Length: 540
Ligand SMILES: *[C@@H]1O[C@H](CO)[C@@H](O)[C@H](O)[C@H]1NC(C)=O
Ligand SMILES: *[C@@H]1O[C@H](CO)[C@@H](O)[C@H](O)[C@H]1NC(C)=O
Ligand SMILES: *[C@@H]1O[C@H](CO)[C@@H](O)[C@H](O)[C@H]1NC(C)=O
Ligand SMILES: *[C@@H]1O[C@H](CO)[C@@H](O)[C@H](O)[C@H]1NC(C)=O
Ligand SMILES: *[C@@H]1O[C@H](CO)[C@@H](O)[C@H](O)[C@H]1NC(C)=O
Ligand SMILES: [Ca+2]
Image: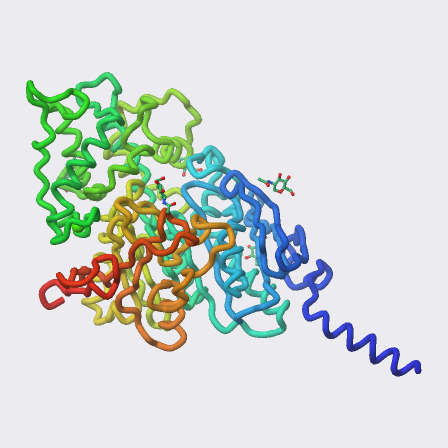
């Protein structure tokens, strides 16, 4: 009797698969860490830890253990990370990232990833703030370093320890997927801690912090002051965009509302010039045209120094943040960074008349928070078998597509002479019509299940609904590369009708490994991926 009762007890104890309690994790982490909370979430449950960067609560979660940890990173700073450990675990670990200067745990991407079975991690990077707010960085060099790279690496190491302990098993593979600042965080991991991840998927990385943030200020100044003859009001950008599409859409060989090759478009800006007959609300003066020339040109400064690439033709719909400046001042993505990270100034009425290339030089000297992800020698990551997939939208109106092209070419220039075969570990894709990280103009197919993309389609969307394979899902393509050594070729991007999965597919089209481009066969429905093929440029 007594023995039987004990056996029943033991048996029922073992069916409680995992121990999601704070005491279970005590002693696993180093002394300068605090396990803030351990919460068991039932299937279909929710989780709330809203922050300025990620205000939306998770709902519809799979059964999981949610852990939050605080880590002292210096005597004056600390960072937090979150970890979701789903009961239905796929034996893999994944990290996600942040946006702008934002601070907050990305529980949203963690939900996406845990619905796919990953143990999922994200860090708040050491502070709480919205994406355009860098005031936390003022005279706070330790938190700048946390944001720069320290919080990500520290979180990855500790979150992996908790994951192993929880499941009582080794992690089979570790991945990372994120966009924008998240892309920078991923490249930084490759450069500084190549052992952290087996596969990394980055979109539109904000990798060149000292140049990107200063350029974000400069491009606003080009279109100011509001009463200057040079100023293009926001009401004219739809007019400009229409003219760009009118000229460039068909130059790629197919009039389909998508500018597939903005670099190849011979755009005649003077078509926009006002004549005595034209309506003033639908044309540009000669001085406004000069501003437009600047917007579409690289920032090249003293001694012919290349500072930063220009926006691509077809990116105008997203100019509200940096170019339009209806507020009369440049974007905080520029000013807030320069004041708080660089000049150590809290001035709200700073005189930007003195701003210019010398500020970029100062930024390069100081490199606040060591945030620049500009070490192009990725060979340690390549040697240990790491794989990188990188993508960038051609209609990105926040981070110029050219900055990704420049990064890829710098890696080629660094590694090809050393005999490192870049396509063996790094593939780069341009996404025609895609805006910053997600969404598109002209109904262009953009969805590949990249960092942050699923959540924009719905809080419980994960993977590529209806197309759960490595041909359509960039993360699955990366996993196939890492785990089965099958390198990705074309990746088919999807556009759902009105970006609603329930409304079905509007269009699909292959994305091609750079520098090849998707070309229409000339026959068949151009909305089907099978009507397109990747064509190489010359022999490359
Ligand atoms: C998120 O959850 C918190 C805590 O449960 C709650 O106070 C808040 O109202 C929720 N926010 C939304 C938008 O539902
Ligand atoms: C906290 O612990 C980690 C790992 O042991 C160590 O690298 C780090 O320097 C420690 N931080 C502080 C503030 O002691
Ligand atoms: C241009 O380059 C020359 C030679 O390196 C240098 O002496 C000069 O100071 C540079 N000019 C500016 C304005 O940076
Ligand atoms: C701002 O402060 C940091 C130290 O926190 C210093 O390294 C940097 O040089 C300062 N910036 C300027 C422009 O003086
Ligand atoms: C998609 O959105 C457009 C514009 O809002 C609307 O006119 C159209 O009816 C929507 N399509 C569907 C199938 O809901
Ligand atoms: Ca076209």
